[in-house]
Length: 323
Image (cartoon, rainbow, N blue to C red; front, side):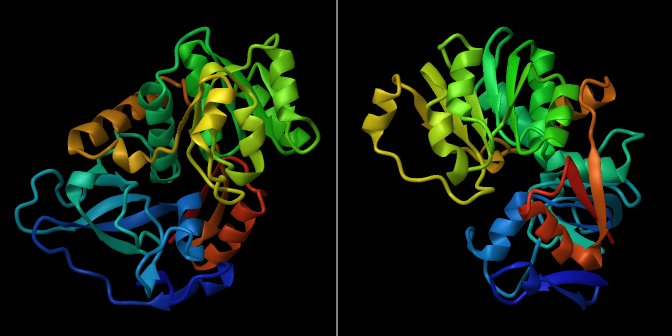
């Protein structure tokens, strides 16, 4: 089978296409034949060593396809079932992968595998951010960074479905139009405008109840300065590099604000939590509340090009690799 491997950390050039034997599922495992593989920023963190992994290694945490084979004792899936997963194990950049069935879900009938691979990790991330990390309410105002990106697009749509006001930040006029089309009430071009000053102007000086920041270092100060008194800073990504360390007194001076650095995997620790998160996501997709934009696809063998585009912020919506 075709697989992408890395033997050292570094830039996209460390991604190598290799031919490997297809794996065999052991007891309590299923073998998935991939039809689409999701590309996520966490893949770049593994590749660069920001999130250390044991080398040599595959890459990728998310994919969708069909069950090719099941190991002894598996009852959650049968051969031929549609299947999608977003919490690994690492190695989704391949034609086949062995996964734990308790960490995978069965997409509803009619959901294209490309959509499932594009949306599961990003969509469940949006779900826990707006429903559980900071339970967003109608009438509250949320700041959403990278609003034209994969998670950002879903966050905007979900927040508007709840009835919240959304201030979106993007990097270009084209992406501003994307954010407005998704329902964002206000859009800030973060490269050209002072984000905090614009947020204060748009909120009558109050600031936002919550800020969802996947960018990291480049937006940290502006995000902190955009919060309302007792607001919540949700730092959930490092697209521009890790956010800086913060002295607790800074949170008090900013208005007794809160800072959290969550990850999806702590919000889907049980199969029941995983199923609930995925069910909430697919329910809104089925109702047409959340529309999934697959902005670009790449052949699996060109995974390095996909990483370059993602890190250069040249992508819009989700990116999918096709085996």
